[in-house]
Image 1 (cartoon, rainbow, N blue to C red):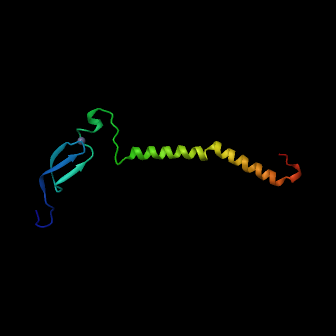
Image 2: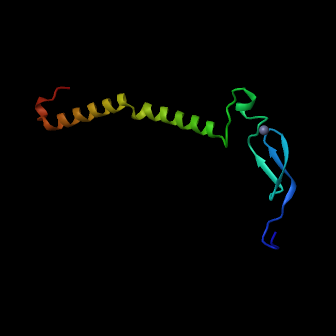
Amino acid sequence: MKAKIHPAYYPDAKIICACGNEMTVGSTVKEIHVELCAKCHPFYTGKKVLIDTEGRVEKFKGKAAAKEAKKAVLGKKAKTEKRAKAKAVKRAAKQPAALIEE
Ligand SMILES: [Zn+2]
């Protein structure tokens, strides 16, 4: 090996998983933190587990709830009602005052 151009090599570097599993490998990084490993990945465990990275599921649920709320205000029904109201006002403005009953 040429001197001074290679990074330091750790033959006993550790890979630490979020589930607590530890593996020893050779690496230029002393400690590697991972979210999944063969001990906890659903593919290997056979269990159906929802893997949530950085609260993505919560984020999506929040977005969906916000969309539903918006739908109630700006939904098709609400829009149709709003349009009908605007049309009625326009029609009333066009007609002479004497013809409007109410
Ligand atoms: Zn793991």
